[in-house]
Amino acid sequence: MREHVIDGMRYLAAGAGWPVVLIHAFPLSAEMWRPQLARVPDGWRFIAPELSGLAPSLPPEDGGHRISHNSPSPPSGQRVTMVDYARGIVRLLDRLEIDQAIIGGLSMGGYVTFALYRLAPERFTGIILADTRPGADSPDGRAARAQMRELLAAHGPAAIADQMLPKLLSPDADTDLVAGVRRMIEDVPPDAMDSALAAMMERPDSTPDLPRMSCPTIVIVGEHDQVTPVAEAERMQAKMPRSRLTIIPGAAHLANVERPNEFAQALHDFLVAPM
Ligand code: MLT
Image (cartoon, rainbow, N blue to C red; front, top):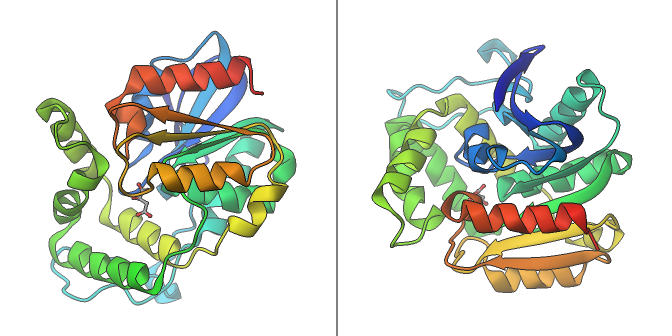
């Protein structure tokens, strides 16, 4: 596994062969894909971009708002959208001279995948949608995001970790695993986290796109995922013309982190026999 930075865009990569782009979840980073980067099947090249390096970063005078742990008020400027992240992925692919890839992500990574498919469907040879959902945020969901932005501004990523960890992993998850995910969250720059919250609360409903997303697709979901439950994954998969569903036993939302072997097996099976 190697870490790269190209034109300010950071990504992790492993393997050699047809590219597979894995987009990370909130409130995490490309680090969350280390278990998959350690298990790349022969003939494939896994690339995990860091979303924060792909979005445009506006200086405060341009309407951006750098948050500080001491500031009680949430950022006011709307800075980043899912389309910005999607454009960033296209830029990275261009820079790596990759015309087409299997592209997908987990949870927020799925939201970016929907935006990218609307922007550049010709770049896809397959789609991976893990522990994600096509719908936009409900009014309550948006209000919860706004509260989370306030919490982040007041108390930093550690407070977000406190709130999110019980949703990301199973109650009986190994304590070392929980500590590792907490470290990952606490290492994410607050600005990047805030931008992701803003982008998620403004994202559109991607449900109408599902029937048009006709590449071979795998929908993966943790058996105990409460953020994007199995029933939601089943509804999404039923609307996608060339898709299959794999449920990861014993996993919650971060299925790839909690059950890396089973997740890797699901990916492997999809890569070698997409339909
Ligand atoms: C994620 O895992 O990316 C987030 O839980 C998604 C969300 O909050 O909608």
